Image 1 (spheres, rainbow over the protein chains, first blue to last red):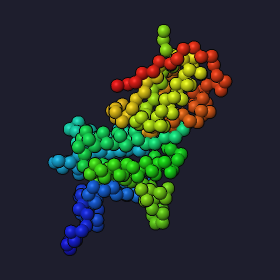
Image 2: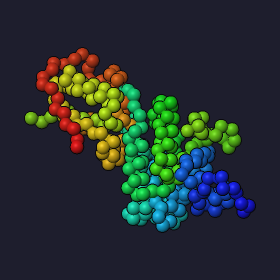
Image 3: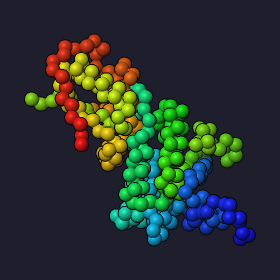
Image 4: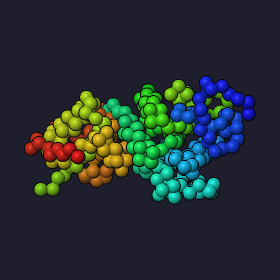
Amino acid sequence: MSGVSGLTIPRVPSGIDGFDLISFGGFPRGRTTLVSGTAGSAKTVLAAQFLATGARTEGEASVFVTFEESPADIRRNMISFGWDIAKWEAEGRWAFVDASPQPGDEIAIVGDFDLAALLVRIEHAVRTTKATRVALDSIGAIFTRFPSQAVIRYELFRIAAALREMGVTAVMTAERTEEYGEIARYGVEEFV
Amino acid sequence: MAVRYAFKLYIAGNTARSQHAIATLRAICATKLGGQCLLTIVDILEQPEEAEAARILATPTLVREQPLPTIRLTGDLSNLEAVYQRLRLALAPEPTVSGPTTEFAS
């Protein structure tokens, strides 16, 4: 591969060979990258593989913030790829922040709010595992659960800033409705 | 004496919004619930593991633990009508008995 100048941001290998090839090495280190795709385009698998690479690397650990699927479903689905997430959890190399909807859990808004608790839980998981990689899958799900787009957008910005502060490399997944055109369903995520 | 109502209020630091939620909750207990409330305030900045255990995403979040069923309300309680509706409280105030018992989880 031709040399890229020293002015570029260092990369963290995702462990997905094809992606690491076309991205010149992986995801930008210490930054948050938005990965957007249509429904069923395997965004969750990409995020999980990125984290699995971290869980298997000495000196790294991973946190998966899940807004849609339950941790139990993710463990079940990913075992077929040979990723034993439960084992990594037991070893302290992987932690879930379960932000998925609970049965009967309807969000009742009765005033002003922020997502400070989500941020605190992410920070707590990163500190506890000494995580180097974080995935947030998928942020569209948090937009649909809470009515105020402006609040959610601002809180995601705060979370991205905090992730940068913590020095982790993060991937945020978002849904898009078509292969081309608007990058993400709510039109706001790409500005976060 | 068994306490009839038990609430847990999750807040993020001692902000104006947190204070508003606490004050509103105390007022509701005093005027609507006959003061028979056990209020526990949890500051998730001090106790992130409490937020994790209860799967809290937003603050303030009010959880009514007693009576069942458990009810969760998101926000600083400034929309009183919505609060009363969710907790099934009549809009007219009920006679005040004694003040609520407030505990700060530490």
